Structures are given as C-alpha cells and as structure tokens.
Length: 74
Image (cartoon, rainbow, N blue to C red; front, side, top):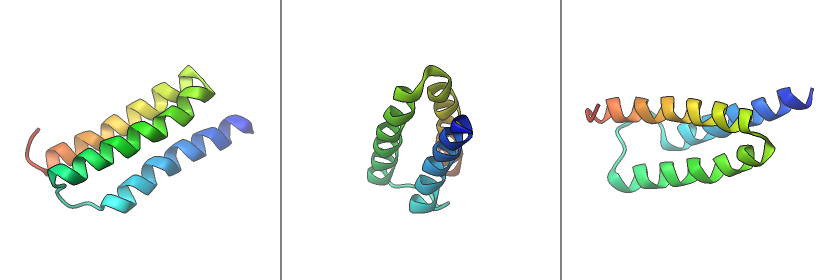
C-alpha cells in the first residue's frame, strides 16, 4: 500500500506542474521555473528510493518533451 501512495504522490506532483503551467507554449522564464520546480519535487522521490526516482524522471522527461514539442523546439 505504501508503494501505491508514493506512486500516487509522484504522478500527482507532475500533474500539479502541468496544471500550474497549462498546455500553452512556455516562455523562457516559465520553462526555467517549471524545470526548477520539477527537479525540486524529484528530490522527494529520490529519497524514497531509486525505483521512484527513475519513474519520476521518466514521467517528468515525457512532460518536458511535450512542452518542447509545443514550443516547436523538438
């Protein structure tokens, strides 16, 4: 059950970032803030174990790729 709570928190953390920054193109400042907040959130899951860090990095990377494509940079 604890593992499910951690994964739920991980996915929710990324969802909150997407909700905060929306689905629009990000300015350079928004991008820097988005990445900074995402990397700060990563520390929480890194402390919980490598498997959670890997999952977080994979999901966060996918969301970053979404914004890169949205900006036409990818």
